[in-house]
Amino acid sequence: MITENQEYLSELRTWSKKYQDWREFKDSSIMIAGATGMIGSCLVDAIMLLNREASLNCQIIALGRNKEKAKLRFKAYWDNEFFTFVEGDINASVNYDGHVDYILHAASNTHPLAYSKFPISTITTNVIGTNNLLNYAASHNVKRVLFLSSVEIYGENRGDVDKFTEDYLGYLDCNTLRAGYPESKRTGEALCQAYIKEKGLDIVIVRLSRSFGPTMLKSDSKALSQFIKKGIAKEDIVLKSAGTQQYSYIYSIDAVAAILFALVHGKCGEAYNVAGSNCDTTLKNLAETIAKVAGTKVVFELPDAEEAAGYSTATKAMLDINKFSSLGFVADTQLDSALKSTMQILEEEYK
Image (cartoon, rainbow, N blue to C red):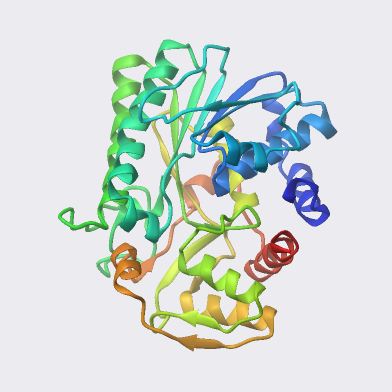
């Protein structure tokens, strides 16, 4: 299990020594929606490690739709006094009446195959689910909510900027299947502003770049995730385009640190771009880096129709992180070392 993987635990310990803002959460309670996802599960692992090794005494309320899946993933914590799992769909309601200081909303479909297979739930989780969580926060006197948004809200780069700043308004064709994810994330952000105005909630928004890391789900169909899985299997890396697309990425453990930092230091109502300072690259370079680590090569293959329906049409989507960096945080893990750690940890887990 990943919670017993020594390299993974070492990565989390390195983070805990590097970023000290977690001390703000001592003796508090944090509700995490989407707790079994890549980012949500890494948040749970990081905080539970600090509970164990730094006496953080932070209560985790993990929300998820599948109790059996959660029990398997969080077996190490299931009977821990600082861990509570709440089964349910946030599109219906939030079924927890205990005290909550903070809410981290990380529940969402986040990969192409999910967008094309489950377009309705992709939208409803980002809109109805967000509304339910914000309404819960307002009625339970929650101190602060963090809404996890996405680089996807910027749409296509029309060639007028090198990197997206937080005030960039990109192009989105809303009358497409693929638009469900970015449009619903935009609506989720608008809901945050509405709750700030009408209910007086304290909310901060993090727009996360494309993410990867050892908590990546096997079902993840993003190009990078498929590259990593091929690399672990010692197979050739399949590139389904020329690979000239330029994207920003972030290591999931850096993303967790950034989220907790934003929860402490972010300004209410503001949105912050979050990406790795050393992780801007082309898709082709990404594939070649993974192939080099794996000792394989890159091959080209066209995607099938269902895959292609969920793909982003953005050819250049890099984030300007100066606004977030000015708060005092930089995610500076090197891309190649993050990929190598991810593959080593997952290789052991896949066995």
